[in-house]
Length: 287
Image 1 (cartoon, rainbow, N blue to C red):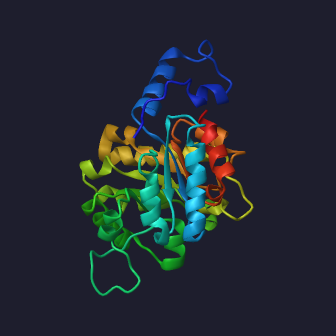
Image 2: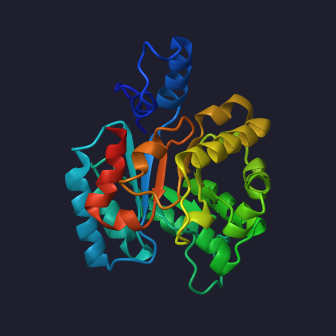
Image 3: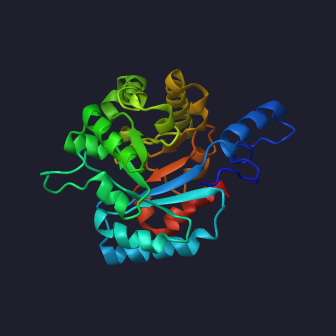
């Protein structure tokens, strides 16, 4: 993945600062930490949307716009399983990564309807989303299940995008830090240092998705910084290199402000990933 960005860091531009106004040592620390050690990623989770034909057209539209945005940003798309084979073929030579939205907790066997990590990887898929809030809420996924899925992903050389986040009740009760810590400790802390080095985290403020409530850029930064702090308790300085994506109703209108934050390394995008113009508009936040 591309890790070096020669453009002036977004957090300098967006926060109204200048090289003269900010402490030079701080600028250097922030730039090294964010723009050399961590990739910038915008991942589109298509969820249960688009037919294979529609998905191909959407992907072709994204490819057509890729050259118009900052080369510092890594693209990932996660289409439905029915599209994976064709999208992987189309992705070759484009620099766009392809991910699955889930994988089975078991390697093989009598598990009707399931798709194993080996099956997914055999298609040429590179990433897999695990622990998404919708999987936790609607399908009862637990840390026990997710530990098994993580093991399957790593055994098949898939890079997990592991989702964490609190719901509205937990946020209003002031339990958001506890919830996120538990989700990290019960799964991520079981990884080896080598596995951890390949992990991507996505924070989902479930309380701000489809509820009419909005997470501010400062709230995103607060929880992203906290996640990095918790990761550092187990993995030390390696936590500074972990990509943490924001996954809460990110749109072209708010992406620049959110992505400008020091500990936000991009986004896991849902609805806005289904329209080429919106997806490009979010990626443009890095320009």
